[in-house]
Length: 81
Image 1 (cartoon, rainbow, N blue to C red):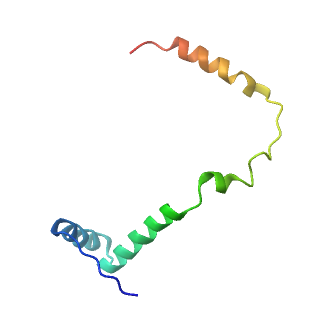
Image 2: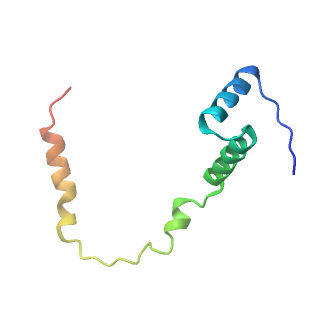
Image 3: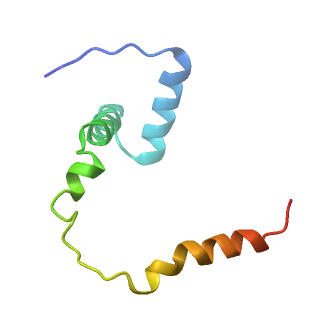
């Protein structure tokens, strides 16, 4: 399906330059850019993607119980800037 899009002179110039540099036609470059942007905007949230895994790992804590204390100690040793 054909769509009509208006570009200012600067964007038109950059599109021509980018198409030449990539070896793609301007139309191909525009289609790829739009597909990539749509993918970014429409992908599921991280919470949705991780939902099948959340709560699956059972742990007794082990060494992880002490990371907060170690982190506080490391911050305390940090020299002021």
